[in-house]
Image 1 (cartoon, rainbow, N blue to C red):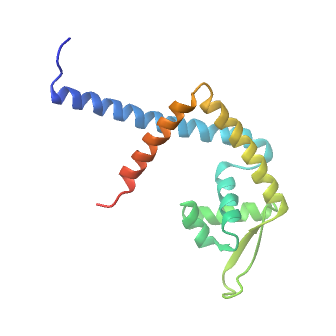
Image 2: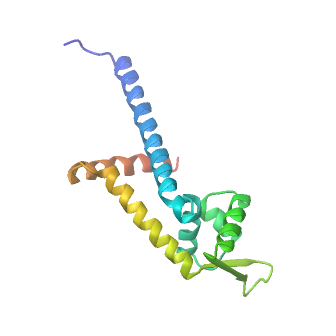
Image 3: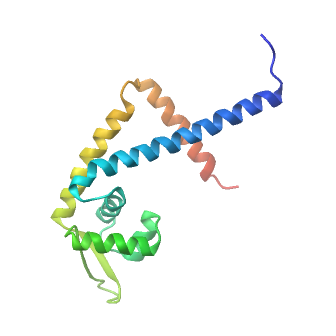
Length: 155
């Protein structure tokens, strides 16, 4: 067995790191594609579901607040809000304090869409994690939490 130099080990690690990053991106791309595919018969996209979920958790939010919470441009948020309002998933009303601001709340139809999306999400998650034993899943969680911490720590 030949000994690897520090440089060879570092290059190998770099390749593994890139491979993992590419796999994470590919998993998320495939996941979103499956979600959109399965949600299409209901006339909703993952972006719209995210907006509706955000409104559920922050009812009465303005368009500007929703764009920040969904991490999308104000123009994209406005298009999603307009579509959701036209579909009857949300209602918009003038803000009680500032009547130039419109706030959004879910309708029963919006709640129904979110429940459908949740069933779709759980089904896809189940397929994603099939054949992964709980102890390996716990290890994946720990690694991903560490990675997230590495990116979000100050300094």
